[in-house]
Length: 155
Image (cartoon, rainbow, N blue to C red; front, top):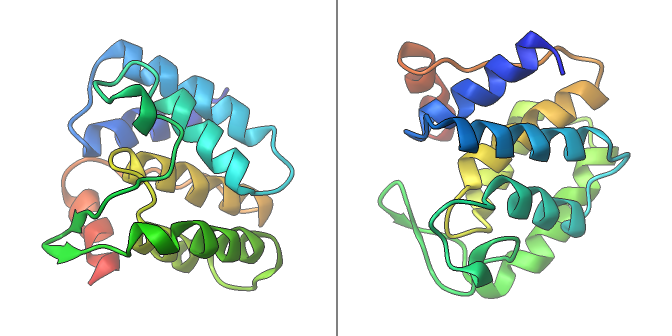
């Protein structure tokens, strides 16, 4: 684990207002698991989420499972939960075959918003996993100005 990776995970948590050491450790465990995966699958997404959210105040049926209810994302109704599995399956295929940028794939993932909580943190992990697969460096988005620029990606 590099200093850059720890900084990425720490800042990714901070963007969501999560600052405790236990959450950082779970993020490290989730990232280590994810980095070891050769391809993106629904199972990888679910396990990454489960590891990341292990000690968060979520009911057990929401940790490592796609949501089964509607959500609001930035004041808009998110994708119907009934379409998540298909959308995630399509997205996973794109992570390995698409010439799309990691940024565009990340935006697409966040629009799917497959979980009740933890979408941003898992999404930024998948963003950097994709960047590594494309031989790009880790992207660290710092809390504050960079965070606001990051949120502008979704406008």
